[in-house]
Length: 198
Image (cartoon, rainbow, N blue to C red):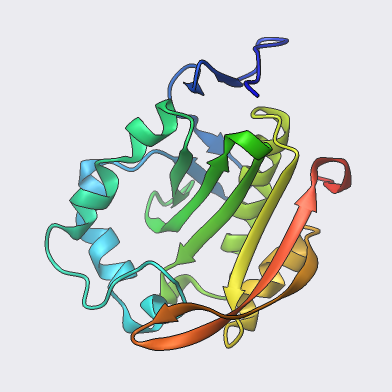
């Protein structure tokens, strides 16, 4: 099922999104498309072993060229209606904090949220603030029905972000993924559009 444009909002049309990638603003943050100038900061922040070990997809070591390769697909994937990946930027001081994304499953009108935050920015509420903003965009502009997310069992801090934006625990996915050769349990949370309050 394709979604059609209504009330000048951004919806899935003909297999992709209308308009350019969005720029979203919250109290302290700017969520914007990544730029070439972000490359070094991405490598430094995502390349921290403590960041990599808490995520499914970030490699370690984070080698030269990986940031460019990762960024190169963002605009195309957005225009094709597959995903939205944005940099988390401190609005006043302009530095990169991390990344947040929605991976869209058009057939079922749902998306999986993913995120990472540079270690030196942990415990400042940045991830929760960014998660609120992109969830609001997903429901209000993309008209998604459901947004869900998972975290590794040994990373409860990520689960707290999900709880703070109103997600409900759905269950434990036993040994659902592999990280550095070890099977990992994932805990899944979700929220429906009618449940979200921003």
